[in-house]
Image (cartoon, rainbow, N blue to C red; front, side, top):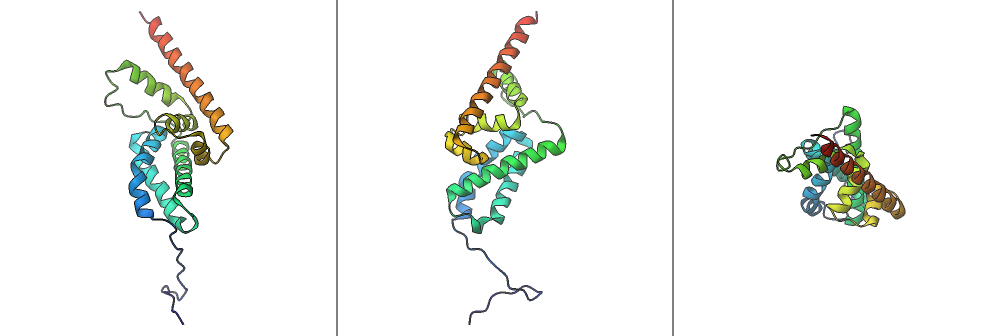
Length: 174
């Protein structure tokens, strides 16, 4: 009869088997997830949010069958952790702009992105920077592909409107 490891209280220790290589998954995706988080909460908090999302994934690693499911879980967890952080602070940080200080167009874009809701920023970032398809965006948010298409379309329109109003304000100033 096989003996199971026990804790100091005499209970059997239950271990969930890992269904995919977590370490390789972490190494391959940490930079991309950190960039995604930076688009939502800013670069100062992005690493913390990404690490919390990976910790959440680590806790459920025995229940996730493959890397595709893990990726969807990870981005959804990161999104919700980022929203919780924003809600707890009751304010939004403006991302650091090392190269954008001299470039007025980049500054306008950063300001317009900051004016979007966290969900809209995440959708725009996922579509433009990560080059995700609508199916992957839908999986990240746990919604339908039609929802992802519509949400991206609305976010793009809001962003265009914000950029146009920033342009109009600059032209009015003598």
